[in-house]
Image 1: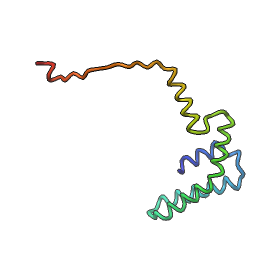
Image 2 (image 1 turned 135 degrees about the horizontal axis):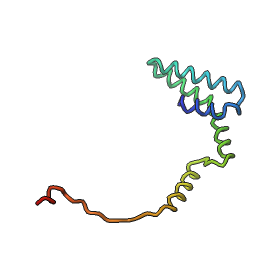
Image 3 (image 1 turned 60 degrees about the vertical axis):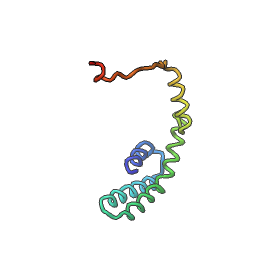
Image 4 (image 1 turned 120 degrees about the vertical axis):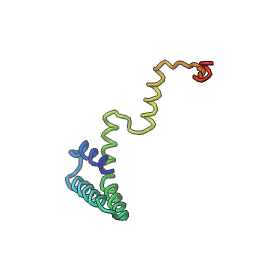
Length: 105
């Protein structure tokens, strides 16, 4: 979660407001501090806070990728993958496994 958010922040950091960027960076730092400890509840709370803080940034990143022509969803990616695999030549063959111990007899 932390790594993905930091990467997204780096990718789209210039397109978000300073206050939003600061809130995300603060949430990341607080989550890292919580992860250094053993308090499960604190980690879950900080993870939720980071998720909330980064949700608008994720929406902007999603919109940015869509406008750049990159697949915006899994369906588009699956269609691209299906087109790529349709272009490949597939050979269907049968085979028989040979048991090495019976081969020597």
